[in-house]
Length: 297
Image (cartoon, rainbow, N blue to C red; front, side):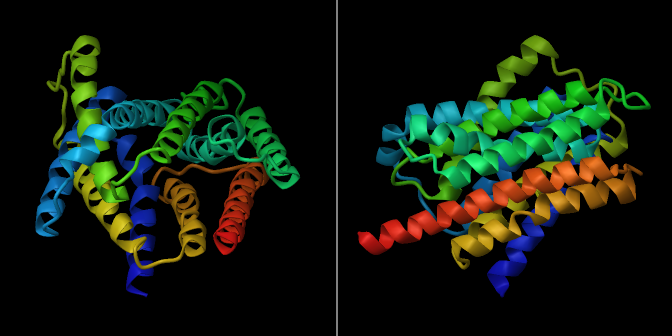
């Protein structure tokens, strides 16, 4: 029960991310950089409290993979935050949750996994769902939104996140917590020169509200949420983790409706159900395949 509470808390925290990002008056790359720096500091703090030590040898062996995945994490954040700028949190979240579909589609090429008819069905269902979400928004969709642009940013963020998931499968002898800590550090290091060249780190227009929200994103949405998540997965089964992960997108839609006044049409809801349902089924299929594989081993 304790692990389940930790996991649910992490999902609810991540679900509220878009509400805070939309109210920070900085560029997406600046927010991503500050998130990485603040989050890294707090994860290092938690790491020291837990009295854990990174294996230098394991770090050296996985250095290239950690660098690539760390860079992907940083640019994944930038693209997701850009998605929030151009479309609703609901649309951004649903397009971002296309990441498992990308993983499923690329697994036969990268991981040499078999693409079963059930997985193909999940991919098709997700594509139909995405079409419904995109088709409703169009290019303007009301207000200052450019939904199609925002959804494309969300899909790009999903592609980067999918690359992180696939790269992580090749990282050996490091725990998920250790891998995430190094990835955040690498993301911060890589994003710093990128932001300096593009934005020149101009914080002159920062309001007190933006400063508070940045601290919340760095401390709570990154440091605390990652800590809760990685300590919870040690106490939960894979199937339970997969089910609880859907609290994130569902709560994101609810928070956006409550705090930002965003709504979804019937066809968007159907599209969202198709996307989330297909990713849920694909994860259930993956868990079942792993169980069969383990029983034969």
